[in-house]
Length: 251
Ligand code: PAF
Image (cartoon, rainbow, N blue to C red; front, side, top):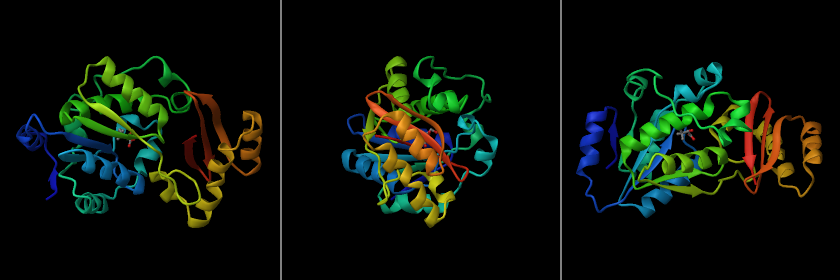
């Protein structure tokens, strides 16, 4: 049975009942779950004695207040997916519970959070790292699952657990793509089926074995506004805007 938990006392009671020897898998999300999240949840359920999903739309990681206001909230569907996948608990805390003193303490990383996504979205990574630290402390999972789609996020979370001595193993999970090739993302739901087909050209172009200036030129010609295309961490990472929707990918 899937238990829905909204307050932290109930959560701590649930957590304290889990025996020391058993493993607890954790999938942190902002809700609006899609097949990419389902694959993280499936892997966690398969690999652990118990699995907890968190749904928390974290206000501090939105550099754009309009984006926060329009972030899709689909709790009922998300909980239904958790039940289908036999997730043991869904933690849905409020902003007040997660930030009892407001945004008083913040995690600031001073290296890779400063460029690419970090440069395009000021404050985003501090907000993300702060909430991930809070969630990891609360959940005390043995394993936490993160998708490779947000590759910088994954690297930053790996660094966070190392630097703050957090006893949770970070599990990197491969990108789940639409049949057309675009990575699954909650933001995709803002595009029509026709637009999604056109948007998928982004991933096809990014994957081509061509020098970066040519990649950028092709993207521009296809109607994308290029934010960055760069090779770092043994990958090629890109971010574009298409019909006012921000898309990121890495290969
Ligand atoms: O990737 C996300 O959905 C969010 O950044 C996360 C890790 C749940 C933190 O709010």
